[in-house]
Length: 330
Ligand code: PEP
Ligand code: MG
Image 1 (tube, rainbow, N blue to C red):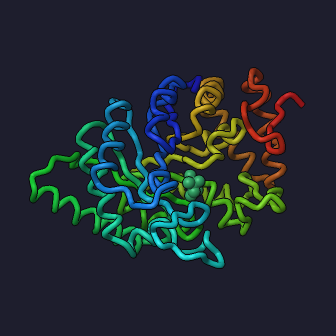
Image 2 (image 1 turned 180 degrees about the vertical axis):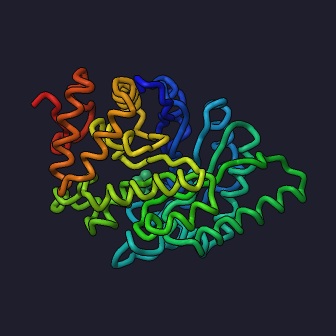
């Protein structure tokens, strides 16, 4: 920022092949590597060697930058037939992500082993998706510890200090993050899901898209709580949901104290421009004012107005669907 606060700006990726292009966009690292895409468009389950090679490649190419690998987040909108996840009435509320992984430790442990082995080749971090409470987090960590012990016994090298984090994308996790903070090194806020769960708005239903409001005061209060509690417990907190890549919301999140923004590769230069054009103390004031407003719409309009003042060079975000495009010129 103009007053010297350094913010980590990372990119979200789905495939190792994206690495050369994201480096071109000038990011500090990868804040979300979605590994479930490994499982799509095939009939078998990827083995340890195949996963290890991919993670190692990403770790090496990104070195010395860090890479946060998210463990398998299947289910919900990401259906993978070979894993035998049945059709459910409410897939977003169903057997998905960490719930699936804890029920199928033989699949989960293969991934944990591959990640740990790859951690020897760069600066890897790892995070669990869809944590809803402390039991899940402890169970995941204990499987992780089991894998660490197994590797040590076999004298297979890995980064002993690899950071492990939890995605905060369920309201119950957001409300109990003081408890969760004791078990991890960082949080990453997944607003794509956090918004849909806290506002009861299906993130993929166009008919109710108008209700999907990232700046709804309920969502902002949850985010504020997560950031404050993380800092109170001495851990850092990032955001890898789409909200972090919206320039006007970036002002707000900056003011709320977010440490890391992980955005789609194309948004990296845009958010970098936004962050470099403002003072942190002014954004803290902006956030205070915004949090007093009663509705998501008002907060969104307020932040868009402020963005025009702080970063007039931003005109339109590139490549967004027309319906959602933000016109900063009006
Ligand atoms: C999120 O929920 O914000 C997120 C980053 O994860 P995904 O979009 O893959 O569910
Ligand atoms: Mg999610």
